[in-house]
Every structure is written in structure tokens, then in C-alpha cells.
Length: 189
Ligand code: AR6
Image 1 (cartoon, helix red, strand yellow):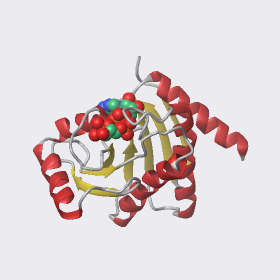
Image 2: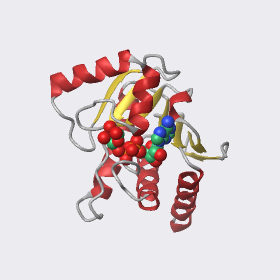
Image 3: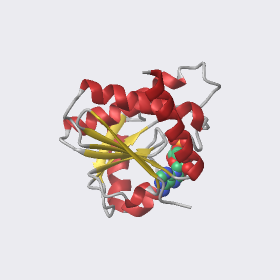
């Protein structure tokens, strides 16, 4: 089943949670849950490199050659190639090692780095996948509140910087986890 959607606002920014495929999103930038080498890999990254085509993969490889491997939580930008999105912001989430190796801080940093880069480039609409919750093993019910809190804190500090932040969740279960996390954060306030 697809089509689940929830929408709210944080200041002047729309926050959208939806179930879907990030490669088809019509936003200025989509975020890639990359590896440190910026190679296509599998998961959402494989899908983004396939849909974006060689322009994305070549630009990512050029950044890797110039900068060396990315640090966890860092973000870089390439063109979107054949994607509807003009840009791809590649970030590296943490690998889950049980939760006491700084994973929440690193995951929050990955979201923040992408949002900072977007604002610095004048990008107004951005879509995120659920970073780290696939191959990297971060439990989605733990990742969701960290992701949403990082996004909310950023938007509160940068009002007017972005018009829309979209979380694109691949499965119905992931969508439900993010919606529950959002409701939990709202109640905690
Ligand atoms: N649209 C939206 N979400 C998707 C899509 C899609 N088309 N495809 C998968 N997902 P993962 P990670 C979801 O493993 O855990 C790669 O090989 C997926 O269901 O893509 O950060 C890289 O090269 C999951 O919820 O990223 C790295 O080596 C979420 O995207 C490594 O995996 C993230 O899963 C990164 O692992």
C-alpha cells in the first residue's frame, strides 16, 4: 500500500511525512544515504544512482577523489542527473553498534549537514530518506525521533530558510514509525 501522508508546519516551513520512493520526488534536492566512498552501493543509494545516471555517479566519484572518504555525518552535493530533483545531497549516516557509540549524535549531524548545505545553496525544498535504517542497521523506531528532532531544531533556528522538508519513507511500517515519533515529540513539548 502507498499514499500515506501527513503534513504539518514548523514556522514557515512545511514538514511532510510520506510513504513513497525518493527517486520520483519533485523537490529541488533529494538526500542520499551514501557510504563514505560515495560509490552507488545498494538500498536507496543504488536506486538514486540508477535513476540519476552517470552524471550523479561521476560527480560523486570526483568528490571522493578530491576529498577522500567522507566522515560520518558530513554532506556533499552533486547534480541530480536524470532525476526530477536538480540536486543530490549525499550524506553518510552512522552504522548502528548498539546505540552507545555516539550514533544518535552522528545521525542528527547527518540531517543537520544536509539542511545546512541546502540553505547555503539557496535550496528551498528537500526530501530525505530514512538515513541509516537499512544496511546500516539503525532501528527505525530509534532513528525516527532523532531525525525529526534534528529537523525541527534546525528549522526553529533557521526560520524562512526552507519552504518544505519532506521525509520519504519506503515502507508503511517506516511511515508509521516516523508518524508515531512526530506525535511523541509534539506531546513532549
Ligand atoms: N526511496 C526511499 N527510501 C528507500 C528507497 C527509495 N527508493 N530504497 C530504499 N529505501 P539504506 P543506510 C529506504 O540501506 O542504512 C548503501 O549500500 C530503506 O528501506 O539505503 O543508511 C550505501 O552505499 C531504508 O529504510 O541506507 C551504504 O553502504 C532507508 O532507505 C549503506 O547502504 C535507508 O536504507 C547505507 O545504509
